[in-house]
Image 1: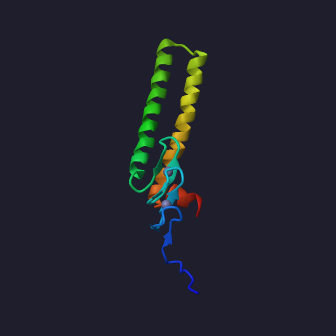
Image 2: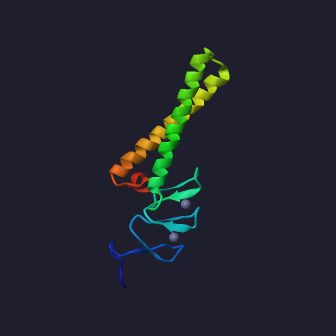
Length: 124
Ligand SMILES: [Zn+2]
Ligand SMILES: [Zn+2]
């Protein structure tokens, strides 16, 4: 009886083809994804080899846009001299979004520099 070596390629049990290193089957998309990072529920798609850089730029542009909105709202409140409850609530909401996006941006920057994916980072 023959045993499999560690260097032997594995097959995807669903797609029935050879799996490359870092390739993973996504059950949400129903296909294997090269350099699988994660399945993003916000864009309803996998982030992998072909779109990692686009996902990174998407996080960065969203961060810039929300920081811009935050600054514009603060400037407008300053100009009007008003501190309405709805304005403070919206600023808090934007602050939470900025915190989340900064965390995501820093984490993905680190993983890019360390040649890691979200999948390999969490499942070392
Ligand atoms: Zn597959
Ligand atoms: Zn997916």
